[in-house]
Length: 168
Image 1: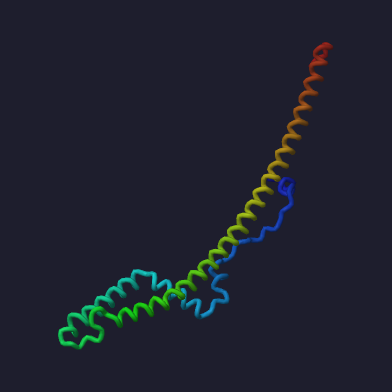
Image 2: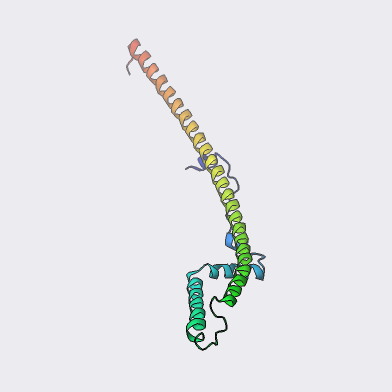
């Protein structure tokens, strides 16, 4: 493109609109929020599930097979103390998971706002490119029309000379 073509449409703001959403979402995060995120990540992992299954199996085997026959089981079947422990764990785990989900929804809102800003800027830039291409096309069409008119004038002049018998 020539410098004249490049300046046909003035440039707008070329600053980036993207943000590092992870950095923005980690800004002003409290210790409790970070802890809730980590607990929710661990609580939703296969490691937690397998460790918890191993713990439950060990509890049942210890109280039923090892300590049960000697009447020393601290929580005999139907494992009422284990049920209390599991209820307390569930009561604590639910709010922690909800806090983590709230933080995730905040991050999702930041992502959506950032995506909107990026898409809007891209749309504006595409419109500006269309305007620039339209301006270039109009200029080229005008130049072609002028060139065509010049050729028509030259042909008309040549035809007039040939009809008069002038030498071409």
